[in-house]
Image 1 (tube, rainbow, N blue to C red):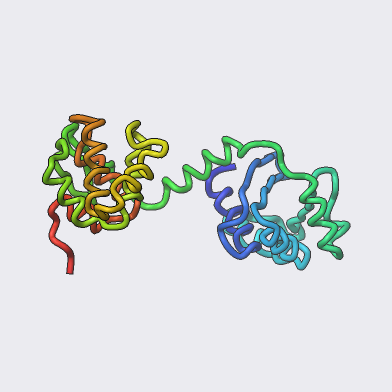
Image 2 (image 1 turned 120 degrees about the horizontal axis):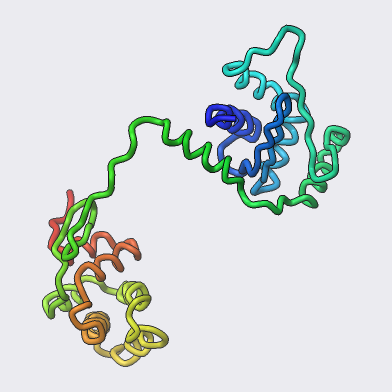
Length: 249
C-alpha cells in the first residue's frame, strides 16, 4: 500500500464522519485481496456518525468512489466490507447502534499508531506542493521576534523603568512566565513582591519584579528572555514597547 492508497482511505473515512478531526488510522493489514484498517475514534459522536454512515451504505459508496480512481475492478466484482470491534462483528448489530457503540467502547485499541501509517501520511504531506522554507538562522547574540532579528543584550535600568511604566496589572503574568527559568521568582516570590510593594502601586511592583530578575540572573537576564515571556503571555504590544517598535496603525 502506498501513500495515495492511504489518502483514499483517509478521504473515505473523513467523508463518513463529516470532517478530519475525531479519528485516527492506527494500523493497516495488507493481505491481497483483503485490506484491514484499524481505526481509533477520539469522541463518541464521531464514532456514531461513522457507524451511521456504514449502516446506510454511505461508507461503502465513499470507498468505491475513491478506490475507483486507483483500482479497476473486473465486471461483476464488487467491493465488500466487514466491520469489527474486537471479537464482535458489528454488521450483525447495525440495527441497534447502541450495541455497536458499547462494543466499540469495550474494545479500545491498545496498540500505538503504526509506524507505516505515520510514514505513509508523512510522504503524502511531503507531496503537497514545494517544501517549506528552512527556518531563519539567528546568530547566537540575537533573537527572533515577528520574523525580525534583534540584538540580544543584558537588561538595563532603562528597560526596567520602561517595563514598569507600561506593563500595568499584567506584571504578575510576566513574572510567572519568567519564573520558569529563574529561581529567585519561584514559589511565593511574586506574591511576596505584590504584598511588600502594594502601597507603592503597580509601577513599583513591576519595577521590583524585573529588578529581582536582573539581580538574580546577572548578565543572563537578557532582553530576549523578557520578550519571550511577553510573547508567551500574548502581550505582543508590550514586547513591541520594550523593543522600541512603533505601534502599527
